[in-house]
Amino acid sequence: MKEKTTISVLLIVTAFLLVLLLCAGSAGYLGYRIYKKTLTENETLNVKDREYRLREKRLDCMAYTLMAAYGLSKWEAHYYSVIFDDFSTQYSTPWEIYPAIIRIETNFRSTLVSSKGAKGLMQIMEETGKQVADEIGMDYVEKETLWNDFCNMIIGCCYLSKFIKEQGLEGGVKTYLGGPGWEKTSAASKVVSQSIGEYRTSVGKEYRMLIYMFRGISAERGCKYNEVHTSAYSDTVQFDVEPFSYITNANKK
Image (cartoon, rainbow, N blue to C red; front, side):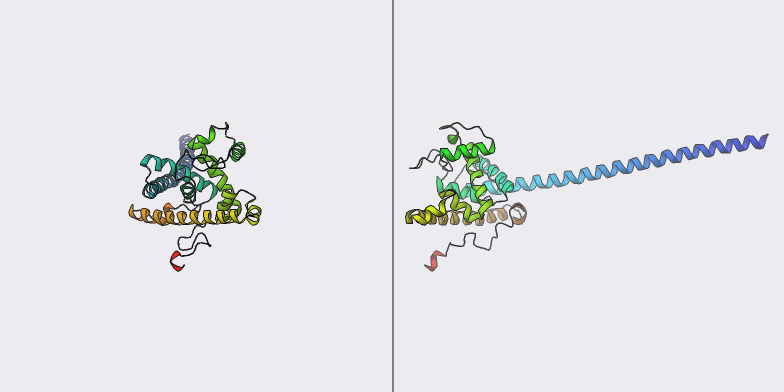
C-alpha cells in the first residue's frame, strides 16, 4: 500500500515538474519573441532617428548656404530649404538646382511679372500653372494662385523636376525656359537659341557656385558632405565633374 502511495506521489510530482517545464519553455519562447520584436523596433527607431538627425543637419547647412549666397533671413532660408529638400528627395535631383533657377529668374523677388506674363518666384505662366496644378491635385485660382509664394514654388519645382527626371539636368533646365517644344523653336530662331544658351549658362554657374558653398559650409559646421548631401541624388552630381558640359573656363577666353 505504501509503495503504491509512493509511486502515485512520484507520478504527481513528475507531472507537476513537466507542467512547470512546459510553462517555462512557453514563457521563454514568448520572452524571446518579445525580445526580438523589441530589438527590431529599436533598430527601426535608430535608423529613423539617424535619418531625422541627418536631415536636420542637411537643412541647417542648406539654410546657411542660402543665407550666405542670397542674403535671405534665417526663417526664409529654412522655409526654402524644406521645400527644396523635399523635391530633391522625391525626384532624386540636386537641391541646388531649385534656388539656382529662382536666382536667375527673379532673384527671390516674388512680385515680378515678365513681359510675357510669367509670374512670381519661379516665373510661371497661367496656362502652365493650371496644367501642373491639375496634375498634382492642387486647387488653382487664376490670377491668384501664382501670387502665393508657396504655390508658385510647388508648381515651379514640380514642373522643373519632371523635365529633369525625363531629360537630365541640362535638358530639364532648357525645357523649363523654352517649354517642351524648345528644340524646334530654338532651331527656327537665333534669338531664342541665344536666349536659351545664355540662360542655361547662367543657371549652370549659379548651380555650381551653390555646390561649392554647400560643401564648404557643411565642413565648417562639422558635417560630412557625403552624409548630408543625401544619397537620393549623390549619383546625379559629382563634385569634381562640371555639371554642365557647355560651361567653359572664362579665363581661357
